[in-house]
Image 1 (spheres, rainbow, N blue to C red):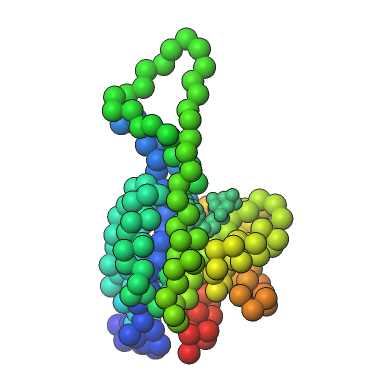
Image 2: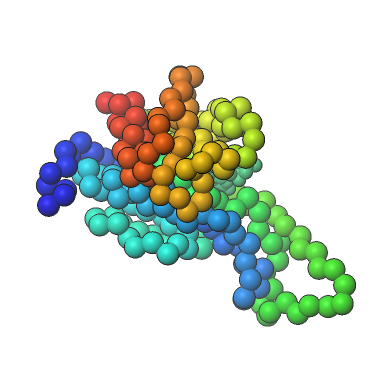
Length: 223
Ligand code: CTP
Ligand code: CA
């Protein structure tokens, strides 16, 4: 019923959203990860489907239910996410990278549980591929890329350089320091940065409402 009452302004559009954390295994019982809960990305996928898009959600491990009408692809590591996203990228109109992708993974994943010794433990880390940067290098004509940036300092400068470096059309910048923003909250405070240089800071709102604003702006650039 809700969908019947919602304008189907994304009908015919293919939207791929990434959400949640990645997990990088150290051994069969331990991993490196982050505090992402996936709420923002799930809200975007849910609203895209509600508005008629063909919505795909590539998700790291979360506790959230698959939104109605969304095709969900579960992944664990950043490399899994890279494969899942790049293989589906060519047919997408919008790609929205809300996931908190691990920048590093343990250089080796032990086959057996690591046992503690008497001294220190050092884990060597190796860089993961940057999925958004790869998408930006290989953008199909007319495709729009939206990145996210979560920062604790120099929010707008860091966000602007990510927008440029990764060839995004739009970037959603969040400060972990803002009240009502950050991990696990139901609201978000964000500044939207656009490729043409303009910026917009909507008031604090629910992640669903911010999802609609993000989709509205992409649609406006795409029309
Ligand atoms: N991202 C990605 N692949 C990675 C790392 C990040 O696709 N390996 C994407 C994120 O999904 C997000 C954007 O890039 O949309 C920015 O992520 P962020 O972690 O803020 O930026 P980084 O470039 O990784 O820089 P840093 O963590 O050093 O601030
Ligand atoms: Ca990062």
